[in-house]
Each structure stands twice: as C-alpha cells, then as structure tokens.
Length: 216
Image (cartoon, rainbow, N blue to C red; front, side, top):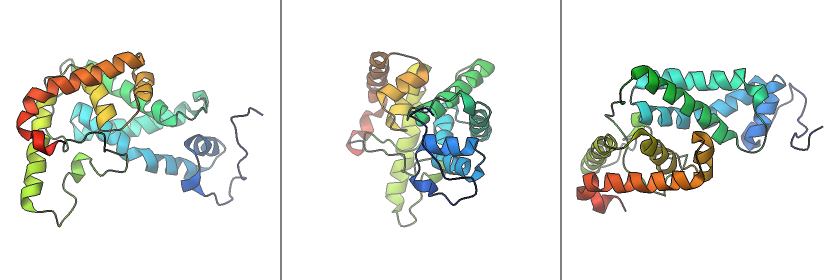
C-alpha cells in the first residue's frame, strides 16, 4: 500500500469529516462515501464560485462552471495523486474552465461587481463573495456605501489589466493562495507569478489613488 494512502474506517461508519484532510476525503469518496465528497464541496464551493465569478463576472456562468469543476473532479478522481495539493488541483480545474470560456467569448470579460479591496488579511473564511458584499445588518450606511464605491472602483481598474495579471492578482489577493500554488495552477514559474502580482498592483494603483486611506 502506498505510504501516502491512509487507512480509513469502513464505508458506513461515521467519520469525523470536518477533521479529515482533503486527500483522505477524496479517497473516502472513491471508496463509496458520498458524504466525504459533500464535505469537499462544502469546503471549496464558495471559493471556486468566487474565483470564477471574479474572473468572468457572470453569475449564471459562474454557477454552471462551479458545478462543472466538481463534476470534473468526480470524473477524474483516479488521476489525482494525493500529495496534499488538493486546493491547487481544484483551482487548476477551475482555471482551465475559465480560459475555455474566454476562448468561446473571443472578447475580454466584462466586470461590474467585485467585492471590496482586501490585501494580505484575506482568508478563505472571509464572506467576500459578491452576493455577500454587505452581510452585517448593523453596518452603518456610510460604511456600506464606501465599500460599494471601492468595489466598483476596483472593478473598473481591473478592466485595464491583462488577463494573466488579473488572474494572478485575484488568486493571490482574493483567494489567498500561495505563489507556489498559483504557479502550479497556471503552469508558470513562481517568479513569473510574483512579477504578475506586483505589476497588477502597480497597474491598479493609479485608478485607486483616491481610496488609498481605505486600503491599508
């Protein structure tokens, strides 16, 4: 038995799913545990949808492609090598779907409703999907308006970035993926990814100058 495969309880036995590693969940799914796959969807559905939506800015297409990503995961589960890189593998599938969509459109995607600007403090647990732009019912109107205004400004600024800069920036700043993970997803050297993120930030700066105090 390969060293990277761990022994799992028999199918039908209650598993502490939230405590299991992604690789183990996928292995459990391959053994017939449907709840294990449901846990993977629960963990990543929001992030995958947010990534696709930010890149394509079409909710309907983002929902469809998100479903396709998880269908592709099921279809190609046997090809995945358990090495603790499940997130990168899943985002790579999503990236492939996005680029195919761009090819079909034969034009640049239209952006119109990104969430508020967020630097290195972002985590996967942040509720920053477009549909949850303003979740806190107690937030003051002025703060909500400012977030919306910044969102639109970032959106407009992103239009001026080449697609490969935009993708690296979104994966790093919104999805909080490491440079190594992004390099694997996009099949580019780590140094290239770092350069793209820096150039994206540099390209956005002139368009967001009036919001500088809110972007610390």
